Amino acid sequence: MLLDIQKMIEQSDLKIEKERILFNEPMKKHTTFKIGGPAQCLIKVISISELKEILKFAKKNNIKITIIANGSNLLVLDGGIEGITLEIKFEKCEQIENGSNIQVIAEAGCKIGKLAQIFLQNELSGFEELSGIPGTIGGAIKMNAGAYGKEMKDIVEEVTAIDYDGNERTFNKEELKLDYRTSIFKTEKYIITKVKMNLTKGKKEEIKNKMTHYLNSRKEKQPIEYPSAGSTFKRGNDFITAKLIDEAGLKGYSIGDAMVSTKHSGFIINKGNATAKDVIELVNYIKDEIYKKFGKKIELEVEIVGEDY
Image 1 (cartoon, rainbow, N blue to C red):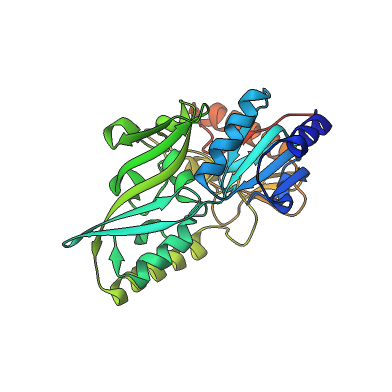
Image 2: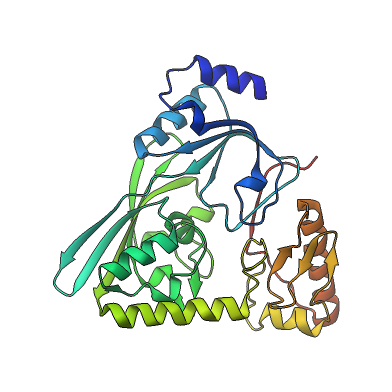
């Protein structure tokens, strides 16, 4: 199928620079976990119009599409990803002022860290707690990312997305179904293209101090010095998963090069050459131990894509 996709793309009228189309591309280069088999075809998409053209091409040729952004909440299996993988790279940002309330429209590929710096320079407050989250604004909406008591649902106004037929739709806040680490985009097949957020005018020094505080807290409490997919497990309704993993004596437990972080038990890290198989086996072991010891079922926060060998 790989050669077929390559031939189809080369013979198509898609106007995409060759350097943005990669074949048999190791996904470990495109995920924060530094894990993953090859994508048959990976395309770096730089505009919404380009995305629509690729979707049209894929539908016509019956090619599977997989969407990634910064690869920060993602485990790609060792067999890689079939079809076309799209890395969302469109990242325009515009600001609409309305008195003390400011609306910002950011394209889905905007990195959270870059947005945070833009907001700092423009003295926009309300994003500080979220400023250290790895990934893009589109990915943050999909999972309703949160940190330090704030979630995306607290600042989002509306989201524009397209379905796999290229039809555009704008969702209001209620339609987004934002809840703990989930949204409508977890269950329905849409690709987020733009996010409208509500922020307020603030003072640059105060915003900077808050961002620095949260960044230092992350450095102190999270294993950001190692590759990971961020927080591995969701918290429970009546328990903190990392605390149970601690109490089960699993801190530092490893399978292959996948290890439960000694700094924060809610993270599985890649010590160097971990495979997806290592991570999956470790996840399953942790799940079994927590259920045996505490009778609690824990759920993954990380999204898994791709094929097993």
